[in-house]
Image (cartoon, rainbow, N blue to C red; front, side):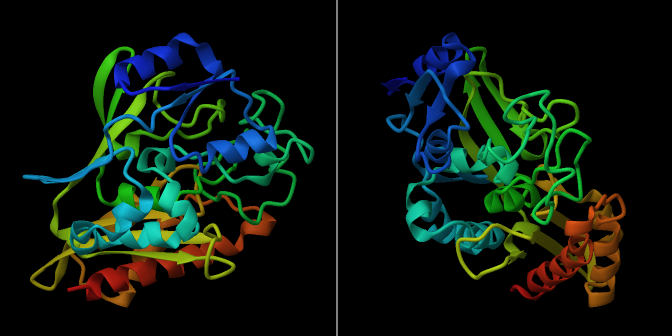
Length: 326
């Protein structure tokens, strides 16, 4: 395996693209190194992008610009994030451990691979993400940690990121650079559903890099919250999680954002739940009705059926915290 340290983004993109599917980018390495050790990924080339100048958080007229190499800890504790995007700060601090947050990059967090045990351990069963066309052992296996939304007959693996749930709720925008130049994507359009090709997890082309995120300024972003339910208090992945943001005008919800984690194959924005809140008073009854809308399309299996009820409670808690946030 070849390791290349790059300091120019266009050269890094061209090198990865020219090396075929065997090339991977590496920054903090908190996910990639894990997968290398497990033998799940075996790239012929690692392109180290830690030398790129994408490590700043910058206030801009319409929000906040966050470089892709900003560390998770730096983003979580940035005063402007804690004040104007509290759900994002809370989501970051709910994820991993302090040591990992000190190393993990924003871009790497956005693109981290699933924690499905069947994906991460080739010895226990087939996985279409790891080996396309081999089958999905999870569907007939132990599914407690798996998705109830967005799955297919080929994959039910959950997206593991806490940060992504908050970014989905905050209407984040992704900026990229690749062999064909620069482009801008709504965060909701970045990740793909598994469908017939679970091995494809985003719309990024091979060699395309996330350069920065843009967080738009909004009233609902300032009144936002993140709630995570897990088996233990630290360093555990979500059973369910929810990021919620509210704008309240004259005692009624005038704008709502609700995104879910721990229950879906991608960061899950619930337009159904958001729509159910508009024009209604910000009460527990309204929140419970909206939460019920969020799971109407849920497809649960015996081991993860508890998530249908649990995610509704999680949504209500997140909405209550958002409502009560000054």
